[in-house]
Length: 455
Image 1 (cartoon, rainbow, N blue to C red):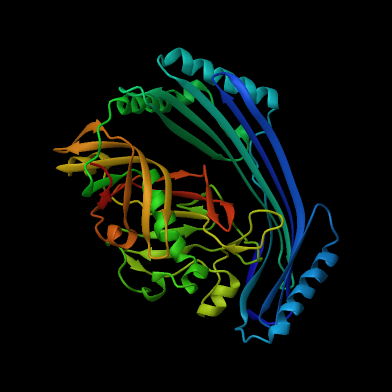
Image 2 (image 1 turned 135 degrees about the vertical axis):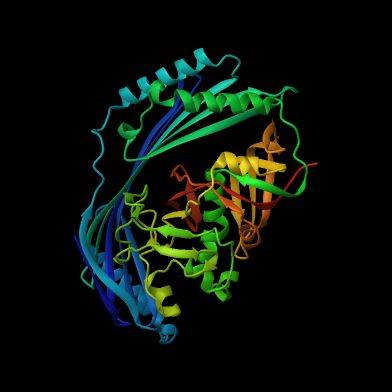
């Protein structure tokens, strides 16, 4: 594989074509009974042309002649140019040649998948009495993209991930339904998911223990508190509340981050990076070596020791900002246009241990899992918290009923006074921004001040 960098390409005449196949499988088992087993496959050819400051895009599902799709895209760009030529800076761009396809374990049959789920269900039912329900869901997703651009890119890239959701349901002391989920995600296919009970026993035991604690949960006290956010929640904060406002198209659209470059947006303990393909010498869960514009991907350092340093860029946003593209333009489906998207976003580990972080809290909360999250361009956020514990005198107390965490990410990150030394990655969900996208997020635990909902 090779990558080369050029300073710019002409404003007019740039072209790209993408052959894209997306395969998905979803299997749901509820209490040992197969509820659904669905497989889908989408394929198509798309093309873009940049002409006189306008983009023309065209996409055709299924097999199609690339030249025909490219001609349609060129016609669309020319139609837009009737509104008048737009001044546009040259598009920064390199070229890339290479192939990246994950080589995991040999595929397993649908029958083997069902046998594995049945065995896992039987184990859970036998080991954990009193469960109202056990739901097991397998998701597999495989993107294959062949890209060619007028700047010389010829690339084949593949992103594969598999996820198993284990959901335990029960009733609390008042008879109301409660549940907790444990997502298990890997790079690759179902065959790369280790669903053996020997491997999962400890995780399943913890999930059941948390569910039992939640049966006797108490309300959180609303207001500003010291909170220790476990890695899964800290990763959500990094992605939703700070990641999106650092996507350059959102920055150009008026995000608060536009005027904060080289200014403090977090404590000295916080460094946040959107990784392209590797972190700490290992390939990340969603490796992007070349984006869907043919740009060689590189890490985007967003926050460095508390200082906002930069953004994730496509070619067009990089030209508008007078900076380099980071290879962050990605399209989810065969008929989607590339947008600036996150890849593998995380806060970097610190030097504290999680136990020490809890011991240092006289009164506060340990927040362990989130059910959903939303944020806006001001970095204001609100997350649903569905697993949390009180901290009293440096020790964990009672479980807390479902609540919310909210605040300004910038103000919250400025209060971070401890970051754990571990690093946890996950790739179980989707990022939403006009189109879904597979991403991974990760990080350590962080301790900060934020608002909790409650009584």
